[in-house]
Length: 216
Image (cartoon, rainbow, N blue to C red; front, side):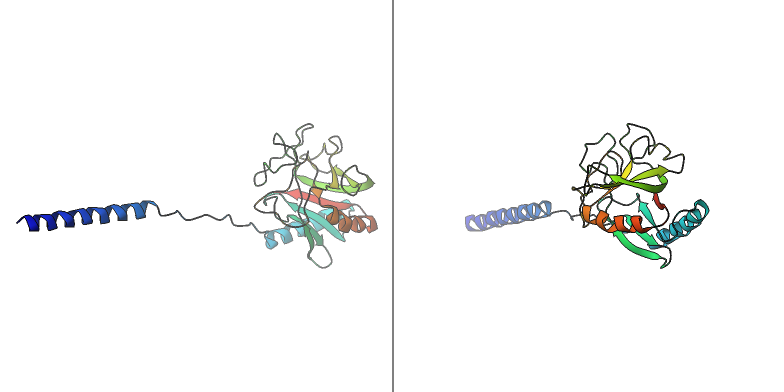
């Protein structure tokens, strides 16, 4: 009887040990890792904006060769500035573009996926709306080229007063940096130096001012 009691005790101990092992295995299982999906521009929306832009350019005597469309609803780490060719009816170039930091730290990406906008002086935020790019000048930033931005709507009427201009910035990348964002300045739409080297000759050779439309 003692022999059978010893065997029974050993079986119970082995059973408890096995159950304990199973419990540990279940609790140590790692959760699924969520990977952030890179957002993409909606071509149909860009096309619709371009059609509206062409009508606006025609009525305001702006260039009907091309325009610059900036979709601020997109993450700042993906290319969201589009050069639209009115003749080809397509996007011919696209670039990263920075926006204003607001109350966040300058040059970082604190609002990479949820920027705020304002027309108020001192807000350090970008302004939505249509702009007329005109008067090429010297910039202390990037490749030392800037274009004055004349705000054509109530949402961006203070652009000149706020010294909001289109220029390049050494900190801006040529390539997409998602999930990181582009560095944020004080409200100017900024591009990389190489981007400005491509865009500048296009604007200079245009016989009329260029439309830049910043929208959500």
